[in-house]
Length: 383
Ligand SMILES: Cc1cc2nc3c(=O)[nH]c(=O)nc-3n(C[C@H](O)[C@H](O)[C@H](O)COP(=O)(O)OP(=O)(O)OC[C@H]3O[C@@H](n4cnc5c(N)ncnc54)[C@H](O)[C@@H]3O)c2cc1C
Image (cartoon, rainbow, N blue to C red; front, side):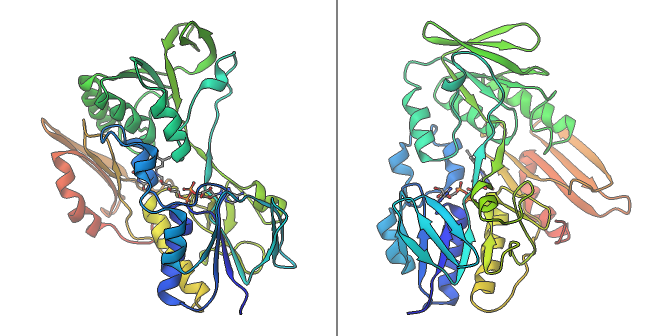
């Protein structure tokens, strides 16, 4: 039997790569290793699961045994990797077993960023980045009326809207002056904030949380402007940091993420990375659409046809039913300007370069109907 392709991680990156690879290569042995349950679920559903009254268990679409059978793969769940030897092309699991590989793929995701908050309740602050986190979060909501959400970015706003569906009015706190500052122009941020406020959310901008203390059944947050806020539950959604420790310990080049070229190759031969853990040609793109593009390209490479990843326009749906939104942010270094049209039932914001090329957009409310028409106008290869 030939040496396997080994994939570390069974999130959307690991499983989509395995699926794409099996479409092209039905012979090469495939091994997936995950330190979690190894079942298949859609992570984006974690931030709108309360509205659907979903339990963590009901979000699992297929368990690890079904996934292994479907992929004709060996799946080691609840297995962490202790050591990787890139020269010997081998790895050791925590239980001492050693596996060799033909190709190794890192698809190990990212960790929630923890803000430097002091106080005896700092460790009680939750973040939701996997099914176990969601189970913990959902189990603590009974009887709760006051929730503080740290972070007014995409995930913070989605959780705020989801909490509203449970009759909880969240307070969203951010050091930035407005919601989704990296994805929306100012007028669009204002519109989204207005809609979420009308639905029952409150916002505190330009402040950070410095301390979290236990105060009876609540957590007392000390804010940087000297004020205090009490909440029975505090959820942090301030961003993710690629998991790079294992790759760095194996001697791979690491920047913000595990550094790869457009072929998703790391600095070691036959070792690759994709998904939230990867920094591909200088870009970390922690969204589903880039992962699908990366999975297809890497599957082709692993099946014998070296294929660099290219990205089409990749719009992201913001799951805020109080203000349906689709964003396709322009590249960070793009020069150009936003034009924004506000109407009673929406906001249509477009980013054009100096020579009139559409490079990005943000559509709110009724304007989301324009999504496909605008995607077709954006050139590929923006990142
Ligand atoms: C709440 C939330 C909502 C989101 N909503 C959207 C959305 O609407 N649209 C969108 O495009 N994107 C969204 N995203 C982002 C998107 O979900 C992620 O980009 C994507 O799921 C990341 O997949 P991944 O496989 O790279 O990482 P993960 O899903 O984190 O998977 C990592 C895997 O690696 C395993 N692992 C980690 N370390 C080890 C180790 N040492 N050994 C073995 N296994 C290991 C883990 O167990 C896990 O199986 C959202 C993210 C969150 C958190």
